[in-house]
Image (cartoon, rainbow, N blue to C red; front, side, top):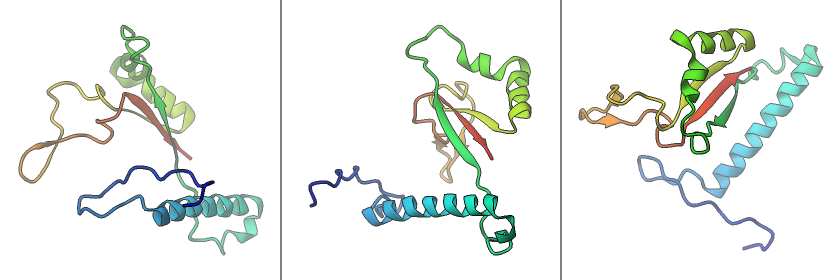
Length: 139
């Protein structure tokens, strides 16, 4: 291999055993993302191009912010974010126009029913195997 190339990440496989993160797939994802960013910028700068770029829609942006529960184990971050009856979270969503979701270990109450698979076993919720974090999604 080329000495200036960074090492490949460990392989990731889908449910059928096919590798998902091949070099070709990583390049395709990177350049598709870059292309969409460029096309969005063109649509912003030149409104007359919008009919030509009809297939390009403004994408939702998403950011994952870790919650530092390890550094501050006694602090109730989830309660602070959600607030009484979810009011604080709803107010922040209304002010910013973004969707705020708490994900990761500890984001779902113990004993709460998760998704069930076809054979009746419980399935982890999305991001449940990750550390506690907030996902903010918006335009």
